[in-house]
Length: 184
Image (cartoon, rainbow, N blue to C red):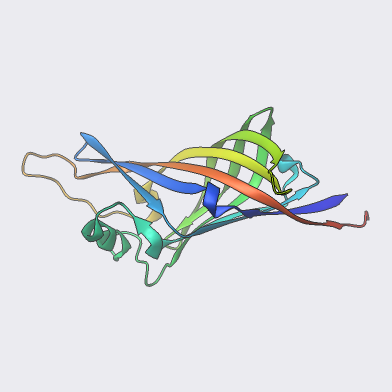
């Protein structure tokens, strides 16, 4: 069997989230600094022995400096104590281009199992001889289940920030050096 390592191509990847504001519009945010590491058998992502995603909370951006500061504060992510968000995959199942990625998601010291939808775009060699794989990942979480419980209500009784957070990622990974693994 061949062990294959894949690293993130940050130039061709992005990590976004969307959340309702005042329940009438959606705010989009992203993380500027993130990493993905994958280890597979050959090029088969359903046989991944490692899928790890990390995002640096200090890199959060919603295009509003004041809001970003609030998100980094103890009211939300508490970046000084919990500097990273982490997802560690435990199983990827499916076929063709549609998969479910099961794993453990950690925010603010709380870890919960989640399932993400994955659209596998395929594997290709780029013009410079690198082998790349592409994925579109989506899912949703309850922010309150991860300790992000800050809330406010307007005078008219409208909730300021929804509980449901939608997650989106466009991920391109680059195949690294292949090493032989001895069969037991």
